[in-house]
Amino acid sequence: MAEQKSRSKSVVTALALVVAISVSGGVAWLMTHDRSQPNIAPNPANVAPATEGKVKVFWLDDRDNQKIRVSSQERNIASTVAQTPASLAKESLTILLASAGKEGKQTSAIPAGTKLLGSAFKQDGLHIDLSKEFTQGGGSTSMQGRIAQILYTATSRNPEMPVWIAVEGKQLGILGGEGVEIEQPITRQRFQQEFKDSVGE
Image 1 (cartoon, helix red, strand yellow):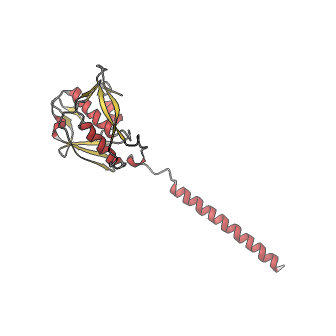
Image 2: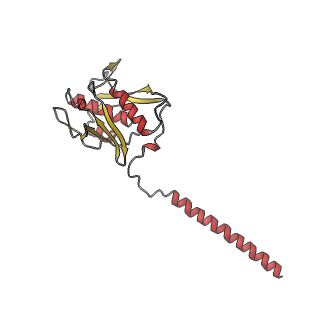
Image 3: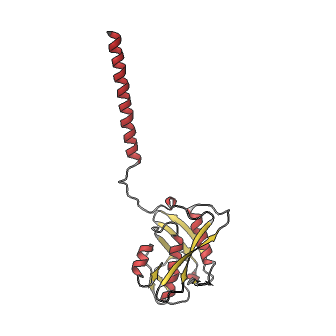
């Protein structure tokens, strides 16, 4: 009889242990899968990678005289370039700025000689610093086009990423002699809303 009671007590203890482990495991799962936490800023590390060994740069398609249309083009990158969001963004912008001119039906509104002085991912988005050449020459259409090229190239892996553009270390507010106002940070959605009659993809 005493042996039967002891055995029953052992079974109850084992069941209690199983229940405790299950409950604690469930609590741990809930803690690690809490979906109520807001995503404060887009995380570039969560973006699916593009083609291995390539980056996308955006040109202006001059086949449409009614709108500024951006179109992407993949470019090869050196195998030594790290496959990180920061390195790939820097590489794609560097290639874009070095490609001033025209290729077939695609052209660039970015002035020759424009250099990338710096780029960095921060909590509030991607910060880009360009040389003074970026602001030189052209009318309002050219200004909108060059902003589109920088924005779309910088966000090719994350279209939701906010972008902050500075020139020679100073945040860009007005671009060009015609005074194209740039509200920062710039996103694709905001850009399309502000220049909805000018830009298409």
